[in-house]
Length: 385
Ligand SMILES: NC(=O)c1ccc[n+]([C@@H]2O[C@H](COP(=O)([O-])OP(=O)(O)OC[C@H]3O[C@@H](n4cnc5c(N)ncnc54)[C@H](O)[C@@H]3O)[C@@H](O)[C@H]2O)c1
Ligand SMILES: [Zn+2]
Image (tube, rainbow, N blue to C red):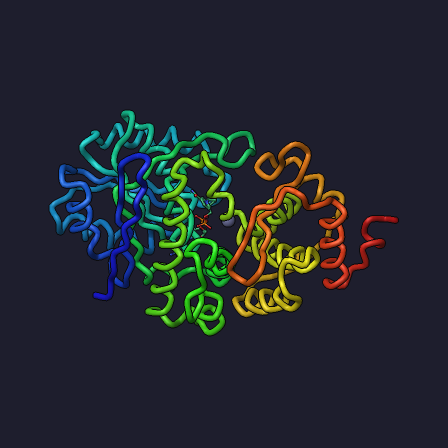
């Protein structure tokens, strides 16, 4: 079995947990549950209707082989089910299963299953141990690391949530084989984002750097994918360790490309997936950096080539007037401070960023219009000027 263990340290809460990455690891779930939560007798597995038929049987067999009793709760897939209503069904099912605080909850699925299950585990009986088994690339490199768990409320994303860390994360890279090309590409957008943060997080750019590795990475090269996933977890963990509960602003760099992305995601009303919006946002962040002369010309083009190479769009299929995008950015409390937009701006070299508070609206509009012109739509035609 090809597996490695990375340990995430979260000093502020005196807790650390392992992230185990490798192929065929799902078959090892029972042994790992016994190692990470030795007192557990019952395992409450939460999955969704796409993932459960593919992987729940292997998971439950592995648990049974380790002498653990399990049940699978299957939720419908999709953001519209990341709700309090789903949580209520989870509480009912867990009561019926007689789940106790000595037992354990396993999240088997993408980021949606992970976020809902994590919040459920944080609140049921004031907290039941939980283990993440992320099955999408996005969940493996992003949402399963960092302890943020949440559900949506009244259409507002992640309105109700907590910080609740798992006892361990099991990443079986074999599960990626069944992911649709679109969902795989969405995960790659976050992976490419890490390439833009690498020097800032580790203090220098190793050779080869992540950007170079990704330039020749193929989805079919399972060992190389596993190494990249493990490295991304390491990078996110390094940021999270410095600011476990997001109080110092250190985690803000993880929002590279997300200021533009959130606006596109909202304007598209669900047509553009998060990772696709991040891809569009990353490209625009690099164009902005070139405009601000914090990066050599040509960097945005290199980033664009990498995004396209991994099947990601850099422009939305429909376009919105720049002022509509900027208005949305301004409403995003995460990016605004005293009337100024805050940006994670690439600087000096690919891999390095800084937080900037002094980006003018004019420059942001220029970036949006430049991209719209590149996409083949004249800015004046769409803004109606
Ligand atoms: N907690 C955090 O820090 C954090 C960070 C980033 C994103 N998120 C959240 O993550 C969610 C998005 O996660 P996601 O992109 O994984 O979406 P998702 O959970 O909806 O998964 C995408 C789709 O892939 C399917 N799927 C999952 N694994 C599969 C597999 N192995 N084979 C085939 N199909 C599979 C799912 O059923 C779903 O239809 C959002 O709700 C977002 O808010 C949380
Ligand atoms: Zn993201």
